[in-house]
Amino acid sequence: MLFRLPTEAEWEYAARGGRLSEGYRYTGSDRLRQVGWYNENSNLETKEVGQLRPNELGLYDMSGNVWEWCEDWYAPDYYAACQRQGLIENPRDMTAGTSRVVRGGSYFDGAAYCRCAYRDGYGPVNRSDDIGFRLVGVLPSVG
Image (tube, rainbow, N blue to C red; front, side, top):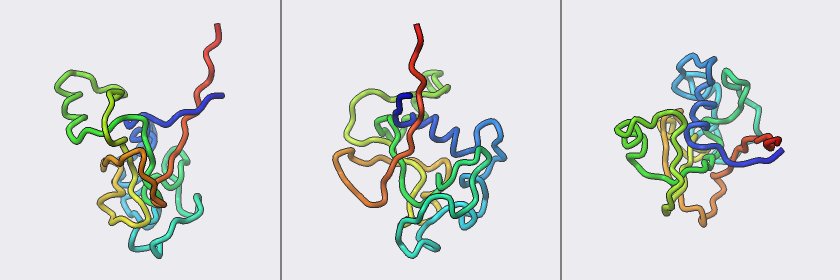
């Protein structure tokens, strides 16, 4: 099996619970304390994954704990630009940029940054203890 970073759209789909989504503000709840580590409950440190409730797909810690890298380059108006072009199903921004998309917020951030919809960009050459990643498994093509 091969692995890669999720696209931004894949990350958000998984965070929202996919087809099982109940429309929560955070990944699995409208109450962040139930599902995510952020500046009010983390003691300003990362936590071991799986201590809080998962979302509808059984995924843990997609709100808070650490920001998660996505494959796409960051542009503040990217989703609006995609909608204007009619491209809305798993849009990918593969053009070069200076920042990659990060999603989910971190242990250091306030609740607003941990919402499923919040997005930001961070330079890929920078390091920080509040940024991590979640991989997508890709089956190799046969034939």
